[in-house]
Length: 244
Image (tube, rainbow, N blue to C red; front, side, top):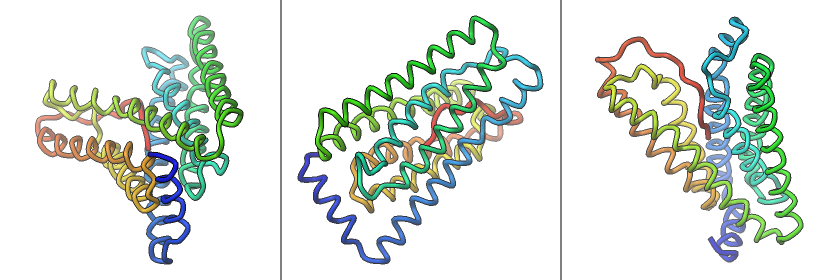
């Protein structure tokens, strides 16, 4: 999207009717609520880690990736970068706190070798985010900064949506939805729909494109669940690898 497109989008967002504004904020708030369901979904995994006093074979990488993704998207939603998309900043700031808490818990119960590795990864995430903030503030004006961070956030979100692709592949291969819980898939779908609507109403390409992709993947997951559920055993809650 060029600078003219961003200017038009900003003008459209500011000049919306009361009904438009209510629908816009309603979609954003709904997205925040559904995202919260995704953020709390790894709690059973961490209860097990705390109970057993070990990280066992669990991987910390989903939380590391999610933390960086949340930080980039949070930065995009702040007035330093974008105007009028504060609900993107709120949901991702909450998400960043959850991912940081999960990572800290993982470090607490990891062995010495893992602890050093995960701490290094965590430091790298904050260094990368700090560099992104510095470069965007020091080298770009506001419109160019929005484009730069916008494309980074789209790339980050699309990368995060690789997780549902792996789950979809697993379901098709095993012909079972054991590792794709219905309510987790439903929440992800509803969150993506909400933020897709939020982005469309704001005419914000950088919000509606990745969440449009998330909506399509959510529909596929729900259709697969409906098709394969009869042959599945009890569902198990997987590690959260992505969110809105």
